[in-house]
Image 1: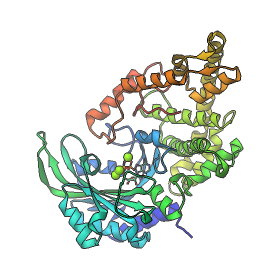
Image 2: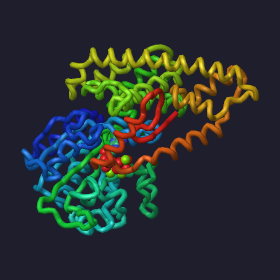
Image 3: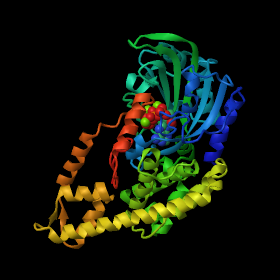
Length: 465
Ligand code: ATP
Ligand code: MG
Ligand code: MG
Ligand code: MG
């Protein structure tokens, strides 16, 4: 029998506890750091230590940190491995052990504790990091062609324009080793999945971009719990692991759908619900309330997306509290604050959902008017986009309602409107901006988003059907 998600988490923490790491509880999703909206990585609570602003209480620590990354919202349900909410397992060294030890433990943990076959692991290193390359090849014994050198975008970590930074090394699992080592493309996610990232914080970067070695070198790592669960439970994606699947099943039951027989589009909606309900439950448990501003806005947006996808599945009426019950039951052992806040979570969801259903009704009225006055029997891209952007109407919903009246939607023009909108906002940045300015920019965007009804400039400008 494969390991459960809970067992994987525990084995990770135990492994590092046995190696003198202090086990610390997950920090809140609301970071102490006022410049960041949500906790997006295991290292965030330790950022002041890495920046030299605070002394560490322990030289080594290990955590399972709940994280939310809205920059991955467009990937939810579409890739096998991305969530908005996930848990990042981490081991940290504050000026204590460094590269060689971090790599050796990552290897031992992956191959011995979790039993991954060594020949299924591929690693990446930063292109100039000859030390890491040599450690993987000579100390660990990985053949050189299975150590990929990657550029700065993927394998160099910075916390901002200046400050501590350093190269990374990532561990990937190979689902199809039979394809051979001739053409290794780590971007090919039908074959590879990144599951563990090791950051070697060894430089300070000054204002001119010069790198000087840090007196105290640090280790920051992150392993995706859901990804390790996918690998060990031998399921096709993170969503079908025991960490999330029960939530999907609850939603499927409400919709009267059999997930295993569902088509791709239906599965995506169920996965979005499974993912977002976890985010929403943990955000509410950590004291965030839905609003049109900042993290409250992110919460509201996630709740609305759950409702919209519920409608796509044919669910009518309020359903999110019931799905949330399953997410609460899954989380309560590790996160007692979730059960403690149950009454608030359910009440908030009930209220938000009722309110949004009214917005949807207003949109439906508008759509009825649009259909009535449509002369060429087609709904324009601009109208369809207004319905989408302001009233949260998925294009599919507009199309479906229109087709009942024998009317089509100009989807080409709709796409153009969408594109225009995206060009107006800056493309979402791949790396997560932890700088003060980056976060202020994001906040400024929210402040401008007054009179908000729809899905305007979000933290990531991501928009999805
Ligand atoms: P990817 O390249 O797959 O988007 P990443 O390089 O952005 O991942 P890191 O910032 O290195 O991810 O985070 C450390 C680890 O956390 C990753 O190796 C992965 O296991 C996990 N992880 C990162 N983002 C997500 C996510 N959106 N959902 C689930 N797990 C994630
Ligand atoms: Mg990523
Ligand atoms: Mg990556
Ligand atoms: Mg990474």
